[in-house]
Length: 97
Image 1: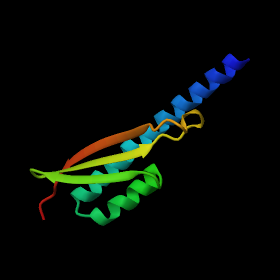
Image 2 (image 1 turned 60 degrees about the vertical axis):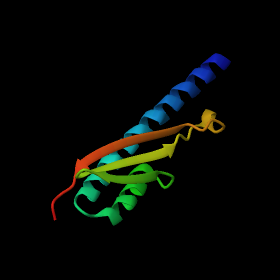
Image 3 (image 1 turned 180 degrees about the horizontal axis):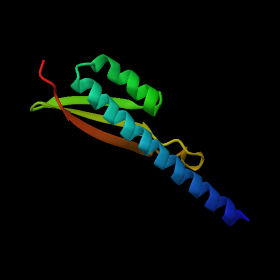
Image 4 (image 1 turned 90 degrees about the horizontal axis):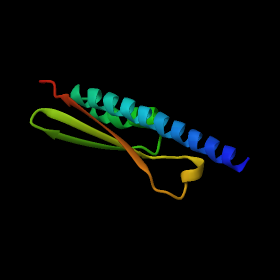
């Protein structure tokens, strides 16, 4: 019985990690599109809405490209003591204004 509980916890933790990564990818892409169009102020709101309030947004620009990185801690029942951080990156060309 304890082995089944450990297996179930491991499966749930893996599912939580997968869902968190998908949310981060979606948030990074949305933020990159917003910054590309010149809506930098709305990017942080989109990240908070899509990836959760604990997500951190990093923006950088180089050679006509916008680079976005979104990070968030993995929240899972068995991993509360382990500092696991997931991240996603996205880039987009800047629009000419």
